[in-house]
Image (cartoon, rainbow, N blue to C red; front, side, top):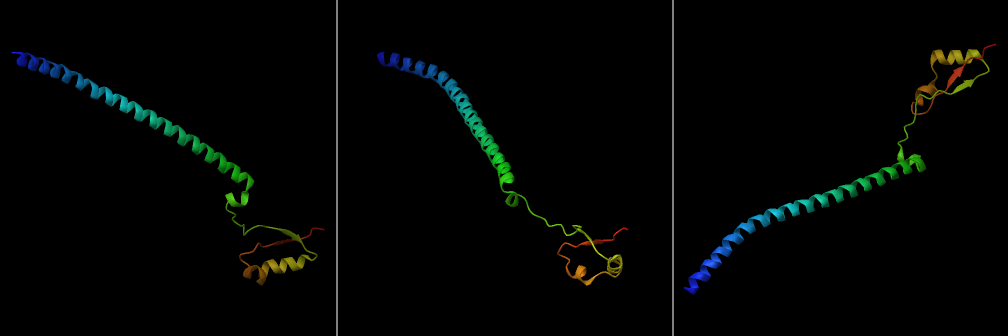
Length: 117
């Protein structure tokens, strides 16, 4: 009889323990989820802080090293007014088109302006 009483007590303990073990995994799951969320939030904050620093560094680089931070695109159509002594020379050059302008397409060209008396 003693053995049966002990067995019944063990079964009751196992049954009551089974009810509590079902509670523990869900509690552990909640704690695990909270831990993951906290970790994720910390990492997200770290990434935001790093990206802010990188953005600030890009601004500093753009100010201190303008040649490195910006691409230099040469302007081929920059106009430089040059005043000539004779108006007829500028008129004949602009009508016929000079050979120096057509051969130097990659260089800046100059525009000859007439003098007004």
